Image 1 (cartoon, rainbow over the protein chains, first blue to last red):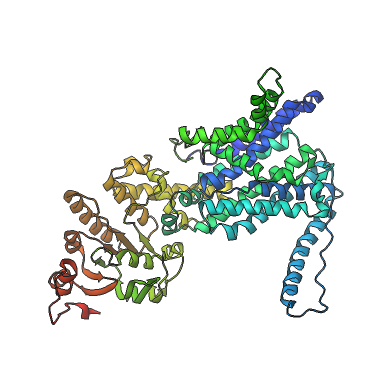
Image 2: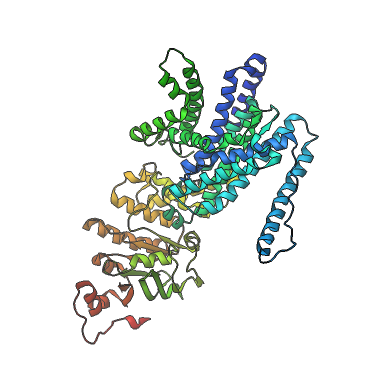
Length: 368
Length: 266
């Protein structure tokens, strides 16, 4: 307990180190163009995604398969902020000739008003951000991407967290697809073409500063009496309720925090690749993140971090392997399709180490 | 005034009336037993009181306020804590963390404080640690604080469940078959423990138990359930002599003119 608030210092030192490394990186323009740098940024983004999902799937035990959906919200709305995209307001329904369908028209009108309130907020924020310098705009885009994703997490979480296990997985997967399809049909966000020309603001500092912040938040939440509620929900919901823990609150909270970090990761991703397409946020992307959490060991911060690093490097290595001409053609084809490898890894892992590669690590340590 | 009162409580699952028009009450600081043959509805009564089920009909009042159908965590916050028939500790946590979880609802700080970890939070965590360790010390579990709760022997796990329930600072403690699976020596220990807890923490205790020695040995008053209905209520001596109770347990025909000893107490 003496070292109770040492975590803050660790966070600050880490961010300072990240800033120093970022400075070193910036000294070498060739490095900034290199593939290694690209992979490094990818690793940081994976860590943010996986640690956020770890709070939901690992620590709170709610199996969510829709993390890429929240990432998409952050990516597209964050980019809209950077690109200064304003939304045209929705029109209400035409009231003429409404018979008994008036009830639907009232609903339609209500929906249009709700959406327009959000559009108005978005458009005003876009207006406010236009004059800012690049990094200020980017910071606002990050916060905005995170908070809109958190909001969508709340909207998805409140109804769907009444479900458990497989049912929750299916519903979250469905919401992932809904979010993707909405973006595919949103003309201001580029519809199926996606968004191009997103400013290249993401750099080493932002990615790893937010990765450190994610780990800090998840660690501090879980290692406090307040955060023991998450683990209690995972271990035994009925017992948790009987001990005075509001299980709904904790489930929704985990979902919202996880979604917020997914949104930030999405914004970072968009500003790294400079091009985003709704297809990139389908459920296969969600499975990628889930595999990181399972491989690292559900509810193991260090393990999930390592798994995020490994599984971000793995596709890159596989891409190289697929190019090796002396390998038999079938092997190269397997290497080209990482999903085959992922499913094999998962099957072997479930048989050999169901607790995850690094599950059980650091369990002996006392509470911080 | 009674602390907890059930007034004609009925719960129906489809066509089955698991509990039918049961009424009884517990006074402040009283130790009451609830017995009955298997499937009589004892645990269902527990689940009704603690909010796991909502009664189909009837009222449940705790300290003068209706609690029927409220969410379990709200009922726990009012001051009813429970243990479970089949132990339900948090399996991934240490002994200390199991008890610490139960302090969650008494926290004065929220998520932002938990993230920032200022001096206030540190002080509160230190206070909680002291409280938990004191409780663990009373129940002879302090040495096991960092052990995984599942590695404890069976009797210690039962004790830990009681400690965890006490950490919520209840006024009424519900114990669901605490003696299940214990040997005679452990049972004697348990009886002492329940008495001790009741006095030390000034609690009312409602005890569901199969073991007659335990129930008759410590309860001040006993209510008997059979097929979801209350068939008798009274002091241990009265219950022991009650022909309806004997019939329920041994399957004998009830005597033609049942003298329901003590049920007129209410």
